[in-house]
Image 1 (cartoon, rainbow, N blue to C red):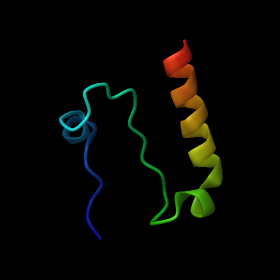
Image 2 (tube, rainbow, N blue to C red):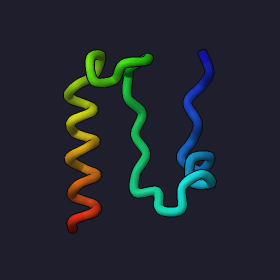
Image 3 (cartoon, helix red, strand yellow):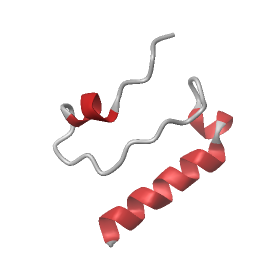
Image 4 (cartoon, rainbow, N blue to C red):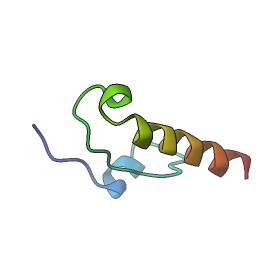
Length: 50
């Protein structure tokens, strides 16, 4: 398993990086960390809408 990439490394791939979160899940985030996934989606929605 590789280390998670930093926010700066992700920024190079995205022209509008709104956020960067590390979630304790391996492959299937929706099953392994559903609350964290839901929180990330709500946070993204609020950043876009607000």
